[in-house]
Length: 295
Image (cartoon, rainbow, N blue to C red):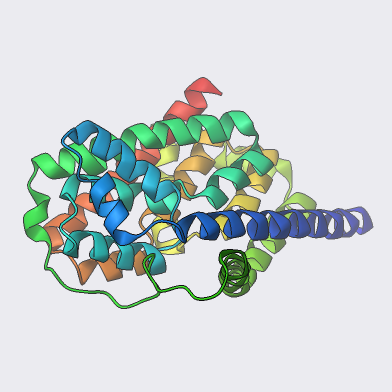
């Protein structure tokens, strides 16, 4: 028992301060980049004649924007209200909560660069195909209600020097995330120290379609934030859960959380919501299987 307690304390402090530093650095960099990009620039960039390029740019734009639905949904509404093409806007919606820098760098830090690279490449492809091409071809643009969502969006007015504002934004983003980060690291450290490897191996070590499907479905009602789930994911992998199953769990929770779906219901009709949730589940399952196949 004493060894387990010491392992728990050691793991907790190591993970917490490592991720705390990572959060501050990445948040500062992203905030600084965001301050030099105006709404008009984004509209111009995502309205090029080549649709395929637009989908790719929408995906990459999503990878550089704020990290949760509270920011993603107001940005999406701003894009659509500004007459940005629907396809790139959907690629942005898929990519933003799943490919943000915090998610990718935490995956790299906790699970290794190979997992982070496969995850990033696969999600680029899915964001372009599902968010862009498929949603556009199915005419889901007609399901948009054309309303405005209030919130601190990507195009908020900034004051003061860019460096000072980036530091303020980094702290403003980190402060409300601290409880989630604390909880995630606590649970992860607890799994490291107290949950027997045999328990994980027996009940949650599958690497097939069924395991990935169950994990992705479970993730949605759990409202898994990256800063909460990834420390837990690291612990689960160390105890025997397959990488792909963990990735499916993360994508299900981060990509279609209940708060995000609720906010989307104010923007779109039910037809779109069903398609969106189904898409995230398919992406979660497929990505999990691909990770298990490659790694």
